[in-house]
Length: 130
Ligand code: TYD
Image 1 (cartoon, rainbow, N blue to C red):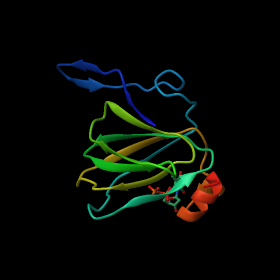
Image 2 (image 1 turned 45 degrees about the vertical axis):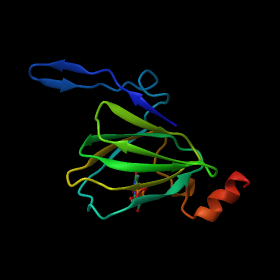
Image 3 (image 1 turned 180 degrees about the vertical axis):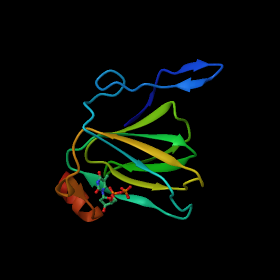
């Protein structure tokens, strides 16, 4: 897992970031979704994916993301639209501490498929053979 820093075009009139598949992120983008209007008390995620990869970017506001590979957990603070969190397959994720105005953009390499989700932590461990 890693934070990707995107190139930024800054001028007196504002900033622009372009994300090109395969160039700025390591996969082809098949789906884009965004998460907003999240209550500051809410926690999201609580799942892993069997195959899917994604990059999450906080376009506005902030939130924390906990990633767990079954052995170790790491916490990331997303609060910068210039940085994307790359989440590879088979990572348990939990998102929390959303700021009031947080908007998350998510870039994904696959279409939505509920069969790719693992929503139970024990099943996640079994899937990993742990
Ligand atoms: P989910 O992936 O569980 O959200 P989070 O991990 O942020 O908590 O998705 C929430 C709901 O939205 C769930 O019912 C599935 C639905 N959904 C779609 O229909 N299409 C999509 O592309 C995504 C990501 C979710």
